[in-house]
Length: 193
Image 1 (cartoon, rainbow, N blue to C red):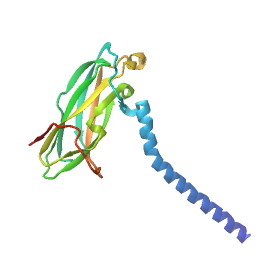
Image 2 (image 1 turned 135 degrees about the vertical axis):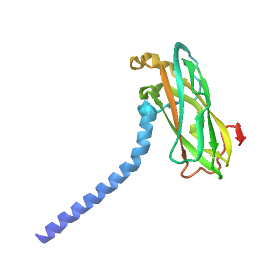
Image 3 (image 1 turned 90 degrees about the vertical axis):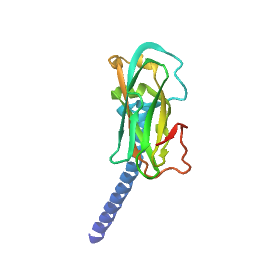
């Protein structure tokens, strides 16, 4: 009887260890899987990445607003150069965000992004964006960073988006936890303070 109880306890202990290992593995897989899901579906206002411009314009005009914020006490000044623009659906837009390192040391930042209304994320496509790479600014350095985008003409086929006349593109800059080696700027518009 005691041997049988020990055997059951060992099996239970082994099953619990296996369960903990499986849950840990699922936790590590959840982030990249969620990121993939958001990029494919536009869930949560996640924008799409396009290799080239749309090539097709539609008469419908949508206003795009630009928003910028910083995470916590990150010592940069960060704002859109222009607050909004109106574009035809399918037309390529070019907007700039300006960042300035107000600290006395070089800093590397990375930007997260989304669009609102969230349901428009599936149709907001970026061709080029400063948010695709980390950005390094020396102490006092300022830089205008571009984002090239369009609103996918497929938006007109989605009856759920008939009421969308304005889309807000938002970025939040964070200090990069572990800056990439060999970091290069994506733009040559850096200006000394």
